[in-house]
Length: 230
Image (cartoon, rainbow, N blue to C red; front, side, top):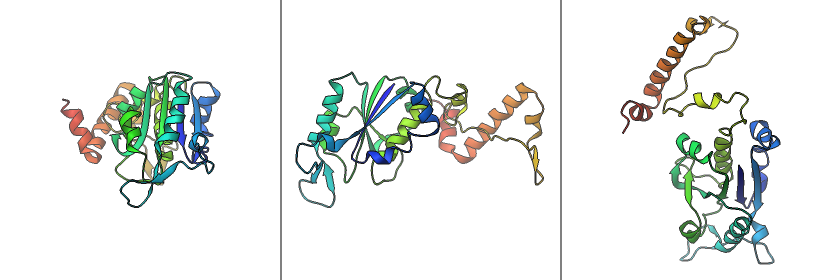
């Protein structure tokens, strides 16, 4: 898989992709991550990529030309499955969407900034808009990193135990069950006896029951979807 991210602040993305699982995924050639400085596609001397909004109002808007020039240059080199814009009013990022995107080959992610991007980019260039939550951040770089992380960890070979992702929260519309490690007792706080029994069938049932009860208590919206699938 290849992920291209377009941004005016590439330095914000250096750390997320240079450590831990995402770093190893790149070293193992399981994913390519390319961050593009949008200013490189500006045609003016100042390398500016934003302008005032038509009609007035506070805040600057990312211009259409440099974004179009960048995407056109990328598409001239390869075919892209999705051009994604990280937006507060986009489709909520959920596990099922991450699963679907992990099957793609090439993805472009636009990290917006300032007041947003020229609406014509959204109308004519972007294929999908994704939101990481009902709140506003200073820019789309962190959401772009979140999306990339959520996708990359699902790629075969990225996690040391490839079954690990299958037991994550939301994979089956349930929250993950509680987990414990040694020591079995700490300050009188004991690990549930069933987890130390060695009875794998009973342990699996315990985990399923805990997932159900935890989801019902903490995320009744998810529990409703699970118990009453459409």
